[in-house]
Length: 408
Image (cartoon, rainbow, N blue to C red; front, side):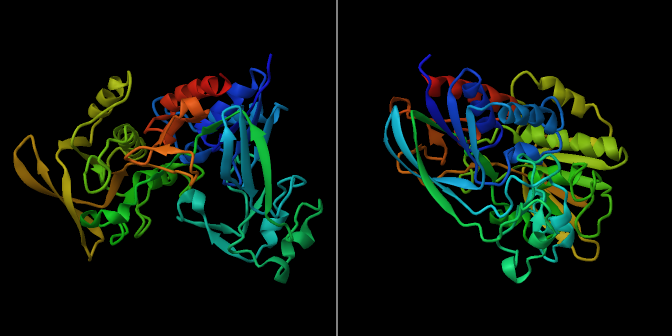
């Protein structure tokens, strides 16, 4: 077999899948991820649709496949700076940010215990804090601590280095830059949620008890800030009434003109989180259309049959707050009854859409919505949500297809 060397950019579920599929048929792969760990957005969810599995049941086996495969070279805390050349002979410049904890780390945690500085926990969308020396999450891969450059005092503190018995801490680590040559490139750079603060009438940046769908995932997660309890932010009380606001910015020419494909299923799933934890809590889902991908219509029917879950066909136009209780007043049109309604709830969840994350590489082709397009004749491909909104199952299938194209 004529072995090839392929670059995969992005270490979320799509990038991981592309990487292992290529390596396990005998080709060499370099995987580049900007964060200190792999897993991307999937690592942050409570359960992924449609199986409602915790994310680690899929990620853990892939981490094992990466660790055991000598054909895979992994660079975390790294970004691709430029690509030159052509199909079959690309030269790629990579920048690796300093990682102040090396592979000697045994994850004993002594460094974090003595660290006096704190940082917002980005993994939990800033809902809590960690030390400046931190484990990204409980199943992080690579399994080692990281140091947040923004909050660490370095040599003026030095406590983490002093306590480490394994010479794993190097506070003098510097940025590295190097080049590799590859045959083809797959970008799986993933997505971020739409900025809810741009939705001025929905009050996200004004009222504490309005959260987004991605924050709800961390709120509900056992390893999240509330250890699996779902609480409203203003007073940490369990909400007795919750509203889900569908298409928050999506299918809107002023924001995201497209459907993000996963928001409906995510909200239905999250409604079940609440219903199963707190059966007495009343849940209202405001929607334009409810769209469930693939062969999952039975999931919608399952949610519809649940007591205390009500679905209201109508778009929420405005959310205001009752200052004395921090409760929320949602104004919407109930299309089925033809009347305008006002609903008071204790917490609201905005179903914000998927926005692609695009690197600034001149060779990339980007469509009108910011998603990457395959340039097959040039040996550059896009996988997963960097190309279009996809759920986890669809991302896995797409990533496998891109692995085949990259090899060919």
